[in-house]
Length: 175
Image (cartoon, rainbow, N blue to C red; front, side, top):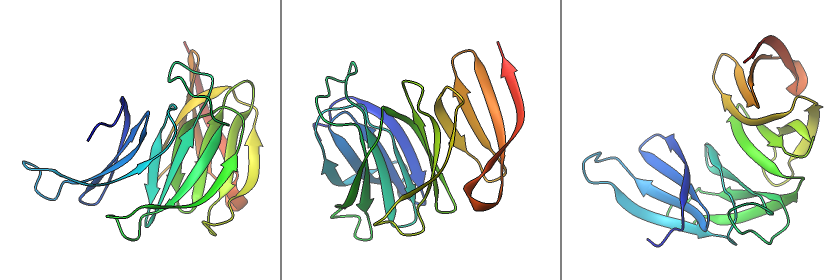
């Protein structure tokens, strides 16, 4: 497969989506004892988390890191309707995208250098729309069905999902 350094793993149904420094890889894991490489979506070398919502994959590419990226920071929206042939739908530039989560057509992206936590409306996959930005300095998110967990330096913040792509803080744990 030659996939650079693997960084993230996202499971949807019988498929595994692997984010690596060189691309996104799709693996059919319907036979858990014999997973099969299915396809790849290649991109420039960069740090690369991946999440999937239905027939759309979201990949963030971040430059200026140990991943040796020299590309603009961005979110790639990839159509995976045909898992054997993933294709780029759109690209959105943003500042230092890091952690990434998805739930019910909302994309949650942590942005470094004080960019906070960004919430995008992804109802139209070809035209993501930034709806809210929260100033919390966080680097990763986990979008659960019940709430969002955000992790920053020496802190964990839990949010409940509100109307119109809002997040309501539930608790903060500093350590």
